[in-house]
Length: 371
Ligand code: F6R
Image 1 (cartoon, rainbow, N blue to C red):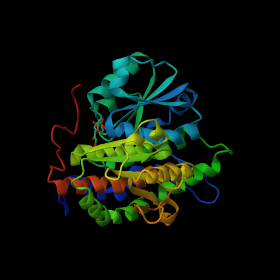
Image 2: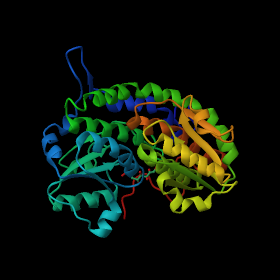
Image 3: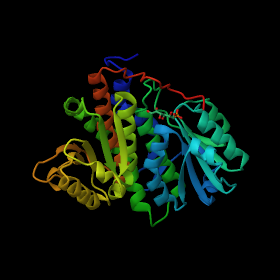
Image 4: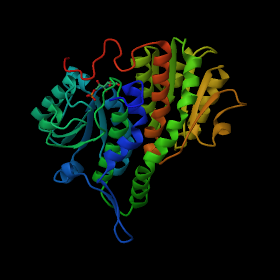
């Protein structure tokens, strides 16, 4: 049921304040004065010690689910102190890459049925790793075959392009980071800030959804373009990859997410006055580096669309020469949840304007059960 919406993708984008609440329900505890703020993940409680002691955490997934894990990687590294590596499921299988008994392998999949991810799970089980599932589908193959796991509880996702599952996956992995990190004096302030940030996230997402009309206007401007680049780094490298994936898969427009730190190692050659470029430059530890990326793109007459924190338009844009997308600022590790939403809206409106099928892009299936 699409309710008042024209497409499932549109409905699922606008549902995110609610789906995020459902994802967090009963799992975040903000007790009274004497009770600390904490996270409860029932499905993991018997395995947390093993995960903390593991030599490495390996995230494994495909497409949007991989991107969600990439977004959560920095906070997991920070709070757990355990090295975190990333594997695209098919690539792990192609290489038969090393997975050890001392590893915790975390399988991220909305459907829980993706063939590559499932085969990578079988491979990790054979190699003796502790296998954790993060899925949106109770009773799915990945949920059944992992040793333990967390349901994201985002509600059924029908649009082929994953939207609300992406943001719920990031939130679940941020909660996973809090659960693994445990309470130590040294990280207490950070933990509490992340927990407070999670509580406030649905309201901030409601706020950023108000950019809908602005993104529709931007889509009108970009509708006839051949290509769109998205530059991000740090917490928002994943946002660049995921924003570009949305644009290419539904709007059928070439789009590439680029790690801003790699700009001078090739992508800069593409920059001219015609190619539109989205730069994600919200406030975090990488902000000044992104400011200098913007300056360099500007010096090459790049056509810039800059996403920045509210009130930062003048800090990122030189002489009003670029288009600005202002978003609410949240705790840095949760910013990817907010930042992806304007790009989901942009991809949606581009698709409608270009006259393509929003909910079932050509050649794609919701659940990829073949290799
Ligand atoms: C993109 C998209 C795909 C899936 C990928 C993995 O919008 O939907 O990239 O993310 O096929 O699917 P799951 O998460 O079901 O394993």
